[in-house]
Length: 218
Image (cartoon, rainbow, N blue to C red; front, side, top):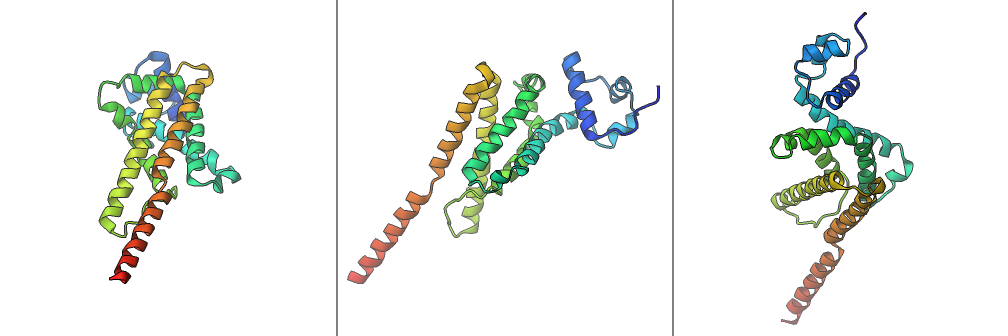
């Protein structure tokens, strides 16, 4: 039988996920994996250097697909950051749910090691970049170093929130994962309520007013 020629990175991801779910382990070698799926071994290396790289890219692919779906929605473009992030979460977890068997396998097998975090490294990079450019309003500190710390804190907190939501979803046994939907809505809304800087801005403005008026009275 002639070897498959038009192999894409998405094909390799699909082949890999199917193999892992059927055999409950990574393929032994790239050669065996390519032979099993009837394509040349060299095609694998056009896209990936190892199976670990494939695993990392799978979670990034879930993110990329989520963004593609969201950007096709005209309403999403006009959402405020809170609703954009809610839309991201619901769409992202629809993708995870569609591939739940693989996600559970990939994360459970490394649950007691740092490798589970390495598997999510590409996802973290993409997600924190998304958060950084979401337009979430932070306090204007007018100091570069403090602004960098504030932005870094926002990204790391958002990433931790996503990890906690993934853990909740993995343990969720409710019909259609409805408890995860509730968790997403409450956690995202709570995080934005905490970030609400309008009262703090008002307090700062009031403080400036008091200081200014006291200065006039002297």
